[in-house]
Image: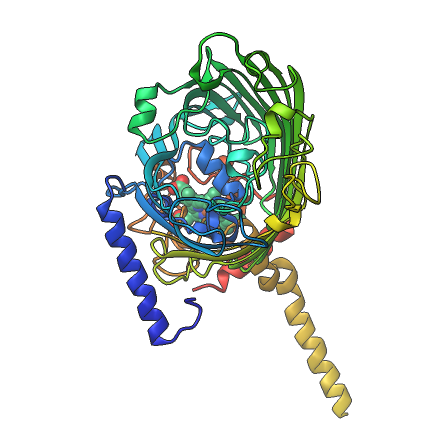
Length: 453
Length: 125
């Protein structure tokens, strides 16, 4: 859209920036280019392809350092803003409008306007807090939030960071782009058909909870974290415009171990993570549904001179469930079950500007008529199965964010074109919902323009 | 006769070139190594500081001399000119050369790569 350097295109681009500024000031809160301004670093130092949230080794250390690193100068304001305009097209129309005010297909959407408080407050305190207004649900909500308190020290002569993260989404605190909150795709349609299920740790509790975890990052290699999550009260959820899901009974433990190696020309990581949760469906006191999620993950990056950057990320999550509550209430057919999810993605970026990513996903779980065979068009499963498989390909262009970029530290834009194809959806290739819908009917073309200042 | 002259010229040229190429490193390889190891934190442009200070015209420059860069106390106290030897020792083992400094870099063990980087830096002013 803004690729041509004609005066008109430039003018339109400036207009877009001005509009973005106006929109930003109209919202109650105001960060992520603010990280670049705070540190004096270019976006490309921390982000593969010069745009969030895919982190380089440098970015991983910045995050684990609690967003506190800076150029040592005063006067940085930890505020940023973001806007995403998108277009979604599915192979076949959906049977009903995906959200109020949208059509069964071909939807243009002002997907997100976000304000961030992102940056350091002192040598030991930093934050990344996002407030988002989303057009599809017409609400302004508290989005991902991560407040950190850190202490840098030497243990056995090695650099060590000890930290606490207070956050509202299990895995949002993670720095490796392999676990759910920050896994590819980093931007996706909110108006396409979603599959029946995924493990709990894959976003089911996002924004509904508050967690505190303590972590240590030793010698730039070993990462260990242990934390616990509780549901936010209904009153707070109402205040921040988040619909209450199920209530966590007690505290849900979350844990993570990883090894990381940064050799500058290349880097890799591998680890394990997990969470246990006892949930009260619909906040009804009594029996609970119990989930135990365990995952393994790994990543590799070839960085070289940063002209050609390759990254490979993968994770596999196993969930075992014991649904005493849902089984008792007749909502689940079986008491016991499991679901597994595999995600692998590979990306290539040229000149910190042009990116291509291919990702594969594979969800497999035990059948359950109560959970999955809802009898609904598009989203139900006549096979009573959550099994969904497919791929996502994305090409993107990120013109700014480099040392010599125009408006460096302020102007940020990524234009992307993404296609998601399904070879299986909710248990079948053809007629998965019993109303004649095929997996490939959900194939989604998604185009986005993502701005940040 | 003509051939002999050319050979002599070539030989002289090679003799002159060889020692520099070996002792002082290769600036072309150095540019690549600089991008791999240093560019994230250092710009070569005058006045452009990133996590580290601009390395424009660094050879011979006095340490901690960029006015608007926030050096560590250790670097301010170091107080030397950045000769090729001083840079070599620093980027081989930053924590040893300037204890308490804030360059978060593990050090480059490869002698040849350090020489290449220094050759490259000496061409940047």
